[in-house]
Length: 521
Image 1 (tube, rainbow, N blue to C red):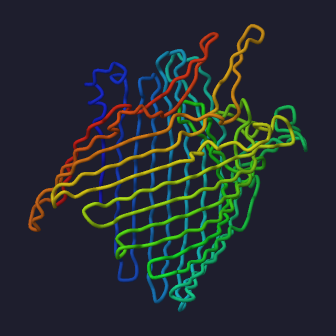
Image 2: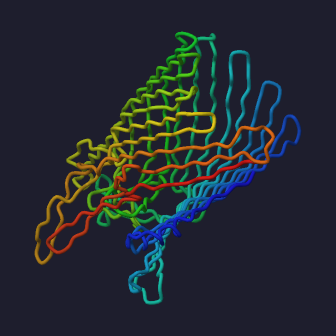
């Protein structure tokens, strides 16, 4: 199987009357391929690959681009009451920020993260028991950032951050025990070991003091492949399921997970330049304990599904940044990050109709996530050590998707999306200090960007349903963002003398018509 997509968005933007849109750029393409070979009845090989590239600039002087490369090779074996699969996967994600409007300030900023993963899974069946077990090894390679001159006249300093590497090994064992047709239990454990690897220069800090240049006591050097720091911990899994009736069930579960890679993001940045950091001597792994309880019901001969789930999470060593920190191209990022505790809870509701002329689903999620950073030093406290919303805390999320088949060939579709705006830290004052001005910010994530609302409509026309045809096709005419809302992509601020100006960046803040023709043969 081979497939690909691309877009002619740039050609359309050139013909738009809006002068700002004429200067914009929005393009992408992706390629996907899969090859399957059946060696015999019990063995098969599966090779797959994916590549994509996106780039855009929206009425600005900066060009953003993203690359994704994925590949996997898997061998599957089916035997007598057992199955196994051996898989090797590779992924590479990177982004670039290119600026050349002013030659003296032109730069090219880049980041990439690569993962190589080897996994061997087994499943064996013993009566009412299904035993799953396996091993896994994952190698992380991070390029935290590079900045190069983008023109001969540029006076921007070239900068290369030290690369990071880490190796995660794990072994797991689980048992799914079907006690009766109505009652089953599941229990398992995954034991993971992570090692941060050199080359690396690691600062040692004075005990009981904060991490900054004044508290550095020594520097340790590690060669390539040498172990800098090792963490290990068990990760537990447990769940029970009980069928109240043939169409009604309840399920409760508990999970503990360990995460050795951390994402850092500054909410007031207009650019999507998140950075990642591996656990090391200074930054511990994140741990999450989650409890969940769900109720599931099928009605009208399984044509309608209803589910309600509630959950609670306890988070430890969650990563956030200090007040006034700089995350981008930071050579000693451990000096500007903090680790604290967090909590998350919520409920999810789903109603899905799978058959009939009118089908679709409606869902609502209430989700909260809070962080607390309350260190022993004043520089290690945020919001006076009180809980505050995490960057991804969005309490309300509502989706309505429906399709109505008018005839066998004609149908209409409807899609409505609403979500709470994500938290932001806003400047709330400007004061003069000496010969310059200083900005006073609100508490961390005290405000939010505007809510997201979008309505899409579509009309579909299928070809006739003759079996013996060279090709089967259909047309789709749709309007994206019918309401033409300027949903915010980001809110950012600039200082202009004694005035702070706020800007909202919106992506496609207008109704976008689309005509699609699909055919298969």
